[in-house]
Image (tube, rainbow, N blue to C red):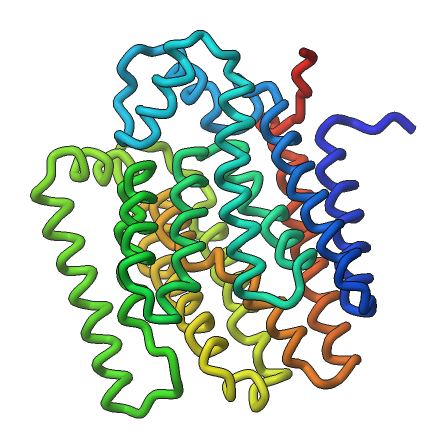
Length: 350
């Protein structure tokens, strides 16, 4: 049977899942680290050596940016884009370097927040890798910096965290929304703290709305995502499917509720994902792209959050139930990308 190009994603996903389940049972940490970095390196080349002009929804636009002297994009991406482009460096070399940067950040984010390494990388691969590394590469870079900032926010290293978020905003200005993470509870909260938390989140959205309306560049972007950009005909169905899929991550904690919320880091990571879920619920029907992309700064935490569900589960049965359930969802998400013509994989022959 001849394997179509799109099916490569699915077979890689199955290989990821097999290595991830072995990680749960294996006590060989060196083997786990070796496999982890080998897979990270593979993902760098897999994204960097694709046909960057066509594979991915936004790829044609980014390729045109590379050929344009002054692309209208954020300054961080523009500087890197112009640096490589001005020296007539092949576009795929540029993609390799960019993917090295962002996957280095993602790998560090995983190592700092999870005892499991392969499973979080598998979850990242199943959705964020295709949606961002293959398509929205500016936001992919921004996401990698905001994800890395989570460890420093939790450990009260506010200067480092702030710098990482500001660097992220140089690639995609929407990354500034992640400053909300500074105000999220890091421990079990009473009613008073809960209302304080809601107050800060609401205040952040009001400030964000004011900034968007005050800055022409931001208001133009907001107009594009909410009115100009084409929306899917089945937006309501897509909304509910996305909501249910994200809700599964939140309710998955039921199996390990008592053990899980005795750890402050678990509480903090859970609250980050909860904010992403709320952003999705409140904004997706206004603009699907806006809801997914803005919420992604928070929902990317599912990579390590689900892994920590497995880590904190004392029962082997629960570990397997959690793994199998979310692995099947991940495989299904990978399958959906095989059905999108824009994601048909084409390897660049150097």
